[in-house]
Image (cartoon, rainbow, N blue to C red; front, side, top):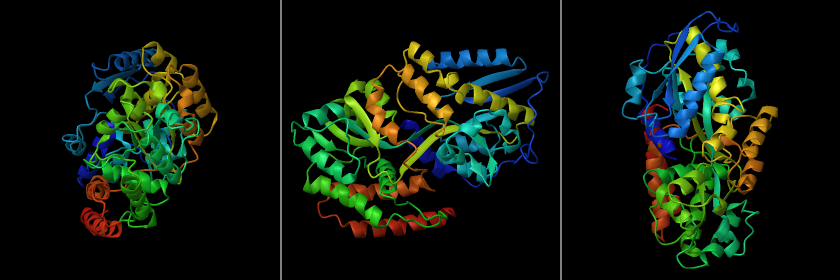
Length: 454
């Protein structure tokens, strides 16, 4: 959650400064494997920090195992927390100071490629055996103009988090969570009727998280935040109005959202962990936050696909390659990423090891592969090693691949700032005029897009 919020802030900061393009990845295909006699050393970003003891141990184990297989390759991890500092990231990019294989958020990939700050790795992509098995939606994030620039590490898509215990208390079936926004509204009324401060549904509405969730919700309705060319807004639409009308109805007509508003992620997670909240929008890793940070219990929570299922916001992170990286470094980097990030049963996808190390296993994230044998293998390995109730995520898992994922819009942070006030108005003013709020927001957002040159 924290990384996704940082990502939206960083996306707005990406400037137009163009670093050297290098050109190492241009030209024809180079499918020849890295010569075993060629000594190569690569630096790789986002090595787990010392504070992440289990993850760091596993990383070091993976480096040792990889280097045993490939004695000619040295992997030098670079650790930092957080892995991206918005205050220095752009300067490092512009100055060509990034690692050979450097860490990025999905939301930043498009701008980095446009600025010439990533190597074209298309000629060498054959070094990654698992690349053909990636989910096309995830693969697309790292492509531009038919060229490939990177590989994913983690991904998520937003869905509906719900409290199974409260569902039972309200007479609802936790095995059949709501699938439409109308059903969410009805279920929220029944949950809030339990009383004792119980809230049926909660929504983020501060620190730009309201705009972020507005984007998620409008995607679920089949709408868009911006036009196809990214130059104009598209949220002042029937779908955008439906998002706000639904919130207004739940807040003021149904009284199923409680009186306390201007909430952010930690507020909502705290309510859920305390057993006082029925539903909210989130990604699968929210389960870990609820348990680790707020002392909740995995068995209390379930996850369903986004209501409406016309679309959902997707995100994640991965790796790009320095424009200065030699073909040998690019090949070695691809081999490392394939080994450590993208092969079921090993590296980060070694679920049996993660469970043995006391880490939670069974959350449906990442889901890097398409509807293919490798994807099925990954899912089965995760289920076999699970140490939490996998069945609670089954509605979400079963719908994955059927709900189109969409990335955050251009200039996401600026748009979210503008839309925060719209969501806040609807949740704090009974007389809020949705049409006027969206029209005013459209003018401001169109001006912001025009200034940015999007």
